[in-house]
Image (cartoon, rainbow over all chains, first blue to last red; front, side, top):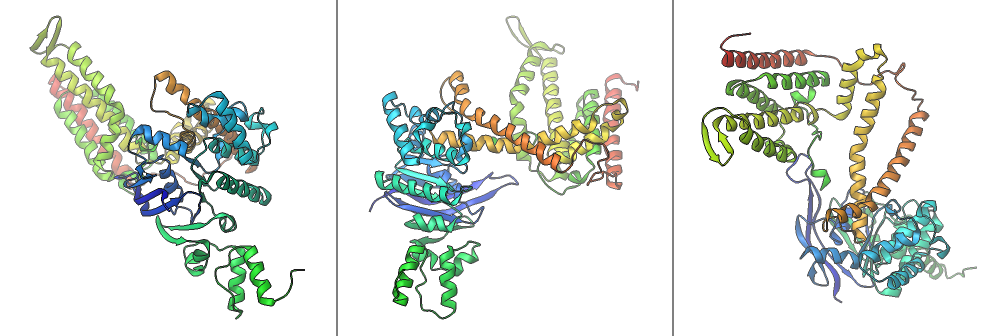
Length: 287
Length: 274
């Protein structure tokens, strides 16, 4: 399968040649495929946000390259500008970027910058509302009247309205209640399934990552620490804990059970998997 | 991008200059500037430049950064130089283009004017902002201005406002960058188009920035009240400024250099001490 985005030897140094010089990421190689959900986890300051800010050309790499469908995203200013419509980036706490008078106008900001017609913009705004789970009665309201969770959805819809082929979200569930988190992840998944876009999601919550990701990238000190399917990554419990990261709750429980001598597989990371395994193990029924 | 502006930035360090009492640095900077304006002729300027050069060496800040700090005032320097070359008179005539005359005196004045501005700016940076944290600077200012309390001048309030303002400059810069990144991600373009278009492109940045700033001000006021802040009355300090031998030595050395430069310029220009 051809990768929609490839990252080759990517390094970034902040404030070079000053006392504040600091290497944020170092020699990252990564492929992102269409229809795939990539979860990025890592300790605070491990370079996650720096990495994703490169993907839509917000910051230029110190060395290395980023290819979108085989073309360098920095090959011309024009190209970098257009890449931002194909690689949609939702930054951390995106609700602080809202500025328009109405929710509708705010979601329309991206499509407007793409130079689309009024009719097309309308289609996209309504479509984005569905994908982000926004009630259409909110559209004529001011974004500043909404609740925190609703603002977050509006901000995400503002990026989805550009119909990006790669949707990147930096901690989209931070500060949301459990129902809000679950619902948001469900909507992101629905967007991927409906459009075949690639999703990149940065999160501190192992549960969220385990629930949504097909591939996991663990970053530590600006380098790729572990990469693989969630099953592969979560089976390296010790390595994850050593990097200051946590495991999904259910993986913790299974590790404890294994310590007590119960023979269980080590790659359990969702409750559904756990239920299946326990059912087979005891031979009992689920009632 | 915006972070790279080194104008008025603090560079943490532990050099002699960093450790000096902020009041000493404030006063010495002012005296340096006054002395600079009293200097005439190459020798006193050389003395002042040598003094500043030594201070830069002591701070251990790289010269690249010092040069970078001059960059923002480059236009001012060029403007000063051009203006003086064409309008200052004296000395012999070098070039005549119609009514425009360039004289040696003009070039001489232009050179010293530019040199003086550079010394002035670099001195303020090196002796103050680069080596003194904003908190220390406002503490020093409050202490220096405290006699004005007698005439009911709100010294504490002023310095508190200054420290809060200084404290939030980096936060606001960071936030501006974040919002700009977010809007750029939605295809906003801040770099091309006419001035009018570019100004308009800033609206999506300024609105969230102001809204967040007001919110933050409210939060800060609340947090301060929660910790029983009620102005300067009866407030004690965590850092108490106290002059140590190093401060006295710096004062004596610097003042002697300044006085030497000023006296020399009097002798060299007028032949006598007046």
